[in-house]
Image (cartoon, rainbow, N blue to C red; front, side, top):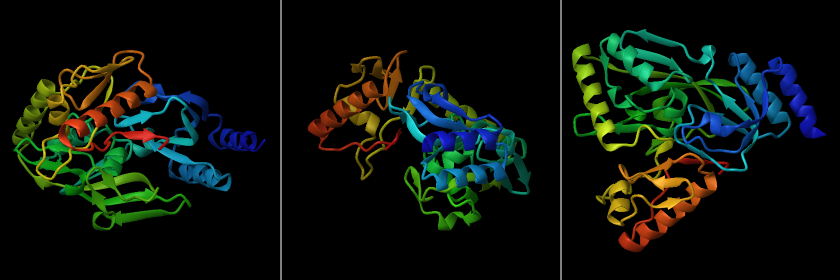
Length: 308
């Protein structure tokens, strides 16, 4: 009865735009995942705040979803409210001087293109990452910068606007967020906008860096088959990258159901067509066991598994 009442509130609040039992395989790059209890795409900040209020009063969990590019949804689905900010209100992009302000729903390739057009460099490393700004901030997304180094969102984010679960809106300086490797300490806050601090750079130079990065990605990564990108974090401490450890353990091509370790990049698990989350999780466990056995290293997950 309680669920029915809450569902009715969501229907009324969104004018019927809420979708119940929405298959999450339609919203993840893995093409895997059970149903979301309630899927909503708020049309603006006030509607988002109202949705959070309904969820809070019903003690309903809230899960923000970006492009679903670094996400594995369990076969049982996600309970509660799943919020997608992939609507026009959250896809605004503005360049002002040396800053670029982008809504949570803006694709990262669009950010790179806009920065290049404005002659602003520093975010080329985002090229080819199939995510949105909100998710990139939350995950502190990063990769090689095309010059032998590594850059992440924490290197370019100046300020983030969030909506807290109680509906309050706050603009938080990057220094107060607590960025870590593949993580931002947002305490459940929903990112709605980010301001990037960039630097003047010739568009031709930016283009060359982007071209080089994309060539490297195409040569080393499996970009065509459904996947969630890198599954494991690199262990650090001077140890080889996760993909190299998996490769050295002889696990490329290992398969469970329709989930397989990519023959091209050992830190990718690919969905051959009908893989389930159970298949992927079983393969993850097998990899962790074998790498620990061979190298004495426990590989931590980079991919986000939901529900946790």
